[in-house]
Length: 138
Image (tube, rainbow, N blue to C red; front, side, top):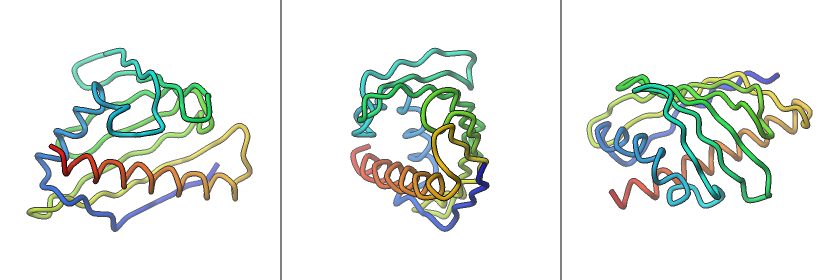
């Protein structure tokens, strides 16, 4: 288990546009994130759902998401390389930009803590870069 706090990131978009992006993740996931294949989303409630997809390495990922608009988004990985991980993205409005902080307890059934730290850093960076790129389109 590795506790990670990643702060200081900033989307090049106001908070309302970031929330539109969060909503689009349920229908546009494979367009937003290149490594996501065959995504499906099961709606559990107005604010939560379970999303499943194949990753670029052929593995199956399953995650439960809970939206806490306009504060943030909680994610729990149920299956995949980060199974058992729970983290929260919270957003800070900053005018024409929006700050993002990620706080979480990350786990992996197949990685050491040091490997996990590197894998989570890469995962967060890639997700942030792809989200920022997609924000330019909406």
